[in-house]
Amino acid sequence: MEVAVRHSLDMEGACEGNMACSTCHVIVDPDWSGKLSRPAEEEEDMLDLVYGLRRTSRLGCQIIMTAELDGLTLRLPSESRNLLNE
Image 1: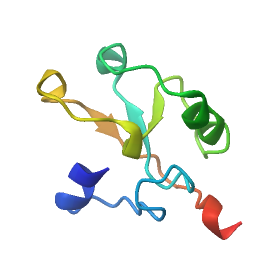
Image 2: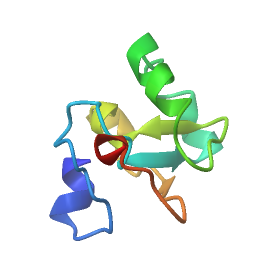
Image 3: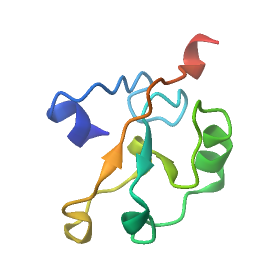
């Protein structure tokens, strides 16, 4: 999520990485999804509430960038859901 914000991508990140809003929902390219660690149960619970859930959906705030992930390809969904405002 921090990388997206640093590069002025349109990602709200309303809860500032506290896994409480789902506005950092991203869709990981299938070629990359196996290289990420498995989502924690808390992340999976939050993903159940996002708009446009896909098999490779993740919360951007939970993806820890490493050298292995250099070149990671993600898509932003067409809309996001801010659970802090509900």
